[in-house]
Picture 1 (cartoon, one colour):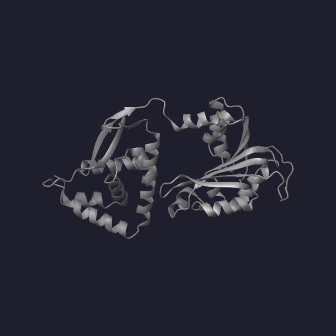
Picture 2 (spheres, helix red, strand yellow):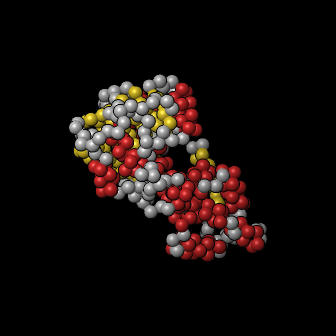
Picture 3 (cartoon, rainbow, N blue to C red):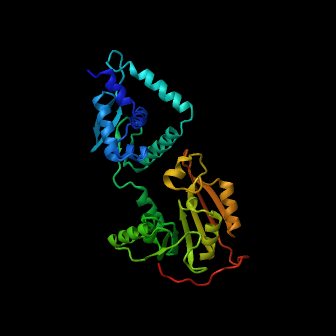
Length: 327
């Protein structure tokens, strides 16, 4: 029998309480809990082990994964008496707007959304079973759509590790990936080599000071990059500068949100952008025919997508005609 003092010690750790709160809401695996809590995987596993031994968490195996959820608190069990008090305390902290818990909720929502998008099964139309759908994936669908696009010269500004850049390379004549981090560019080059992709050039630079010539590209993409810019208006001005007249600037970014923890944990400069503000910044950069839509309307991390076209006779000076191609 578990002694009361031992149980109090287990529940006296903030990390374990946060974990228990999450699995009271959703079945989660270790990797998902690690992403949500920001705790090392070894720490999450240790917390789960203690909670499982205490009878607070149960373990289920499904499809090669191990999922954890809160144990049933049926009447008459040894631990049933603690559940009402525990739920009441967690509800009080939630009601007080506890910032850490709000961050956990936001990351939980994103994990569940990504799980839903990536799974290869869907519910049957009229029964509770699940139907296997071989080959269904968002990557394959985006690649199929890419076949409809003529070969373009494209820049991926803020390219990161280059995974999206690799997808662009499939349907582009050539792609230039630009990022401020030499380390992520090193990983991007390694990824391109591993995948035998030869039509991508990698450049070190800021998206607010792009190391490319004026009027050099057919399309400039800023995917989840604009909210990292110190001055996003300058980043858009640079994107407009390097694209050709009649070329386009395509933006995928976060809709404006209120998750303050993002700045500390992910280093974001801006909490996303409202549709009107984004359209205004694009117009201020010299783009026309602007369209702004909500690409993924999910709180707290909705996605806004926007596209603008550079006029054939831009009424703004181009500040640079050539640039060294060194990385």
